[in-house]
Length: 110
Image (cartoon, rainbow, N blue to C red; front, side):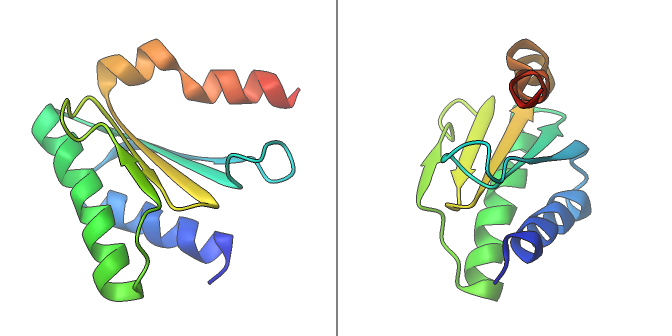
């Protein structure tokens, strides 16, 4: 499965669960961390957990793809799902504004 296909599947899963402000950041050739970041916002801690859980479940059940690493389920304010070439960040709105990953990575690409 290509990075584009994986990214599109994750974006669709998040959109279907009503994630807000889904953004894809292309990092290919810019860092060894990943080729893409998928960033989305949940409306509450419960919604953030549900979004991340749905991505994890759908990728596992429908595509036999498991994340290499997961962080943040306990707090539910920023959950990271690391799929190797695609890293998913599901934020609560306050954390997304505070950490501002989009601005950070856009500035580093200039």
